[in-house]
Length: 97
Image (cartoon, rainbow, N blue to C red):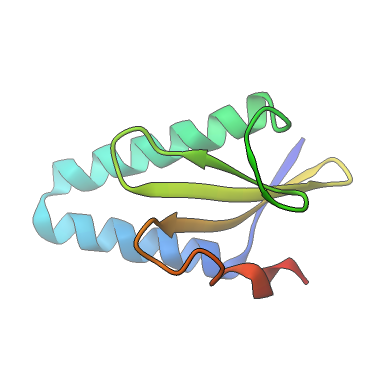
């Protein structure tokens, strides 16, 4: 299955990586590994993860307070958000269009 990223999801991910780099490069690397693990789990079994709204699903990161939100459309996985849990839970909904 093809994997695509919403541009805002890419920016969120990059901002988070940069934030963790200011604390520690090792922490940033650990964050990257964890988000990449979430994405690998999504690719492995996209229908396995809990639904948030409609066809949007989420994988919870194990250590960091983040969820990877995605949808599956016509053999494509679209990463919609790399969402920090302190954000308003619906901030990403305009990305569905």
